[in-house]
Image: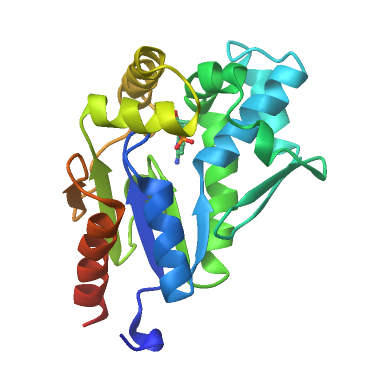
Length: 221
Ligand code: DC
């Protein structure tokens, strides 16, 4: 595939533990894109709010915190996230963040600030963004839109391996987040018009990557 025929942006959406980051990182490495896992931005905002004791019910204070520009993301195979210039990437899977991220990410003003930052990053070069609203809101004109899905059982199994968490607990966390993420009024998780759905339940990572590559090849013409 010729590099200059590659699509400028690739949007990957889907529920928790559907394989978005694995796919985004693999494609970015193979094809030379920048990769941005936007979930990390919402997680970093959540961490900032918890540290400052700003509850998700105080949407005015959350809006101020989001607008304060304390967050910086360096896209890459392992997007690093900085809060006030401190690398907080390794804290983003802490249980307090996991438990509260859906509540903070439902706040419209928080989303506006994150989306502005995401669009800026996407405009700076060839970029793959993964999240919940990339194909619907952040980059609705992305030439390639993928929506990954998998059964709740498969996702809980994957998450429990990644996060050293019991499968029952992972299943509970994931279904709680699925519910909030897909029913919130502001940019709910949804399949974007024109998105290709890949059900990764019984697939190996290589098979998921191959299915995505086929779509990218089609878009590259
Ligand atoms: O992809 P993840 O599990 O790291 O995302 C964490 C949370 O962030 C997820 O439950 C909802 C929110 N999120 C979002 O609302 N929009 C995005 N584009 C990415 C994540």
